[in-house]
Image 1 (tube, one colour):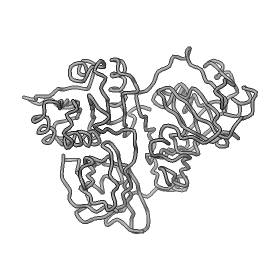
Image 2 (tube, helix red, strand yellow; image 1 turned 90 degrees about the vertical axis):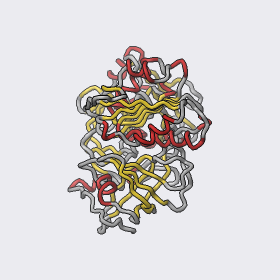
Image 3 (cartoon, helix red, strand yellow; image 1 turned 180 degrees about the vertical axis):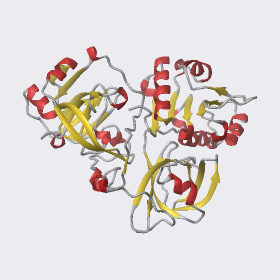
Image 4 (cartoon, chains in turn yellow, brown; image 1 turned 30 degrees about the vertical axis):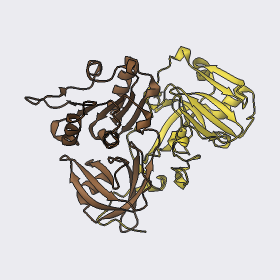
Amino acid sequence: MATTRGFRGKRQGAEAGRVPPGQYLTSDFPVLSAGPTPRTALEAWSLVIEDTKLRELYRCSWRELLALPATEVTVDIHCVTKWTKLGTRWKGVSFDTLLEAAGTEPPSQHVMAYCDGDYTTNVPVADLRGGKGLIAYEYDGKPLALVHGGPARLLVPHLYFWKSAKWVRKLRFLNADTPGFWESHGYHIYGDPWKEQRYEGD
Amino acid sequence: MAEVLAIVGETPRAKSLVLNVPGWPGHLAGQHVDVRLTADDGYQAERSYSIASPPEQKEVVLTVERIDDGEVSPFLTGEATVGDRFELRGPIGRYFTWSPQDGGPLQLVAGGSGVVPLMAMIRHRARNGDGTVARLLYSSRTRDVIIYRDELDRLAGSDDRLGVVYTLTRESVPGWQGRTGRVDRAMLDAVAFAPELKPHVYICGPTPFVENVANLLVAQGHPPGRVKTERFGPTGGT
């Protein structure tokens, strides 16, 4: 390993084991988005699940989403731009619960999340099931702020945070893993922070 | 590995590092790189920095602003000297980029060191001589932290299809030719391309700055899909 002359750096403390390679800790909550923050009125908001043939399997309004059994999680999140934030508290509806509400089993092994602002990201079904994926609408005990993806965002904290799509409106099942927005612009198709899968080819 | 060929002081807080990167595959204006530094004991730190140089330039130039409690920027702006080497990966990101074939008009809005990737676009446009009409609205706290001011003035002075407007948010300077105050609707109406002209808009800067400008532009009537943003730093809020 080639060292950098004169570089010492700031060592992370006891929490270092929770910080994936190449990441640094932040206590702030940075905002990264490719475009302006979209604003959809809650009355006009809905969440849709579609099968691989674009047929609607489920649709819920904002009120209906809030009426579904909620899950609360405290998780570490890791952004590909290098920051890691520990112990973030979220509340929302798990993907498992949504499937139950829809009364369906996943018809395929991949999902594309579609969002206001034309953002998309692909996530394997296996990474959403078993409580791993949430439609989150509360952060730190408060309604999720617009800049952080409110009213609701996908939360898949064990993958780099671009997979936790802000402003999510639709989950579509896909027969094959297909790149979403950042995955088509040079970023990794899966994005495991512990394997440092940041970019194509990692 | 990148080797430092030269270091140029840009402002009291920002320096440009001119790098030789063997095997550099070329880049698009607006892309960034990851810099990885390794201490003697193997400890590593990585950060992303925008590329300031145009694709036409053989060397890769990064302009880095010092963050006082930072980890990598104090090294790059303080410790690094000509001949030093460090790991560099890139180019990265294929969204916040502009090429002459993307066309114009080109509306650039910078907050602080957010000017760096936009400067790569301005330099690319100048080297290419393609004549796309372009405007930069560049917000800085004070006059002395404006990066690239001489070069921007020179480019704008010799090219009537390039307009550069500065605004200062924390200083009032006697005889100042630019604007003062934060970017607001009135300032955008006065100096930025109107939505009817269908400009490609690129905004880069601290999060609250980008959030504010992007919201103003969308309210003004620019389609959100034409407004590309790159944000950095703390949210300033929650």
